[in-house]
Amino acid sequence: MNKILFSAVSKKFVMALAGLFLLLFLPVHLGINLMLLKNDPEPFNSAAHFMATFPLIKVVEVLLFLTILIHVTYGIILQILNWLSRPVGYKVRNKSETTAFSRFMIWTGLSVLTFLVIHFFNFYFIKLGLVEGDPENFYSVAWQLFSIPGYVILYWICFLLLGFHLYHALQSAFQTLGLSNEFWKPVIRAISLIYAIAVPVGFAIIPLVIWLFK
Amino acid sequence: MKLKLKIWKQKNARSGGAFETYDLDGVAPEMSFVEMLALLNQTLVQQGREPVAFDHDCHEGICGSCGMYINGYPHGPVKGLTTCLLSMRHFKDGETIVIEPWRAKPFPVVKDLIVDRSALDKIQVAGGFISVTTGAAADANAVLVSKKKSDLAFDSAACIGCGACVAACKNASAMLFVSAKISQYALLPQGKPEAKERVRAMIAEMDKQSFGSCSNTGACEAQCPKQIKLFNIARLNREYYKAF
Image 1 (cartoon, rainbow over the protein chains, first blue to last red):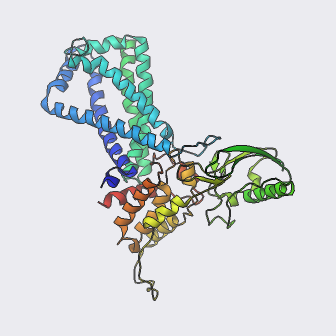
Image 2: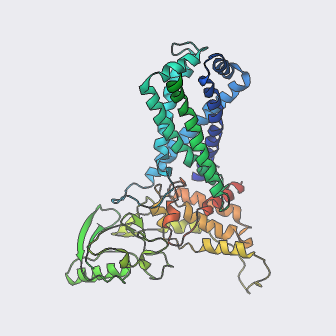
């Protein structure tokens, strides 16, 4: 049974499912973030309050953290096993044609994880009382962060890397789940491209709009 | 043509290895890569030096013996060709060519450019077959197969097990090989009765041989001399999930 649960294919299957679940979460988060563009802090703060207190969301939150944990842990385990599968490397770099960004998934993934940790310090830990701040006024916390040029640059770099990650992630997940063939592959690739551009650009545009017009 | 060859030399699986540089003159553009190496070895033997050990057999791209990693490409820079069908006209006069053995934990170097690829055979033995009663040949029309499926199965069956997919993959994964072997049976009615046991056994053996997992980079498809398609890996995944 262990052979089946922890086979290379099963591990990828779990990673793909976890990854797709995370892909559902991002547009929800983006939708709330877009409220930052309003001059009135009330809609954003009440949305944040709702997300922090509504019981069903609390359940989803646990599921979300669990999913992140599984996706990251499996990703790292698989990467280490993959490195071990080639103990002696080539002298000449492999020039085989590969799909864009597929070779850098571990690095783009770890960058996103690093951002997530920073993000927790900036927001989630305030809610838990671990970091000082007003949990009922995340609007002003966000605006404050976006007024720091260094933070905004880091934010943009992280979302660029997230875009790279997502572009391969979505199409790769479908292939791993066995849901790809000659007909659907170009369609899935197009959806991946649209998603990988739209979501990170949506997030990245918020500090830009604030900086330019507010 | 005059060439500078940097070739991996290694005495056996236990010893370390290093690159050795050879200058070779008199290479004709119409020679195959394997013939070029034979010319090198002829020259080396005449000089009383040790020849380079490399695998080759059929010289027509169907046996899968002649795998080597040439200038960063398994089987060299031309798509859809094995090393034995790669002609020297694809290289420039005076060019330096670096030749390395396949690199993967399941493929230990036997000597120089020769690696032990029996890990692939073990995957095949685990389930890459159908059990049939021998005797009189069955009537060809007793089991109907659509043209489309028969063509797809044939395309997968074109896999020669050379290991270029493993050599090209950043994870040294054998998924394209296994997917080709699974697909050739999964697409045909004859393969159905043992489909579940087959895919479970072959994946288990693939893991046991410590091949990596699939990151869907597509390097295997790009380097496969038989141009086995990535869709086979999606089919392999489907077959695996269906097996429970």
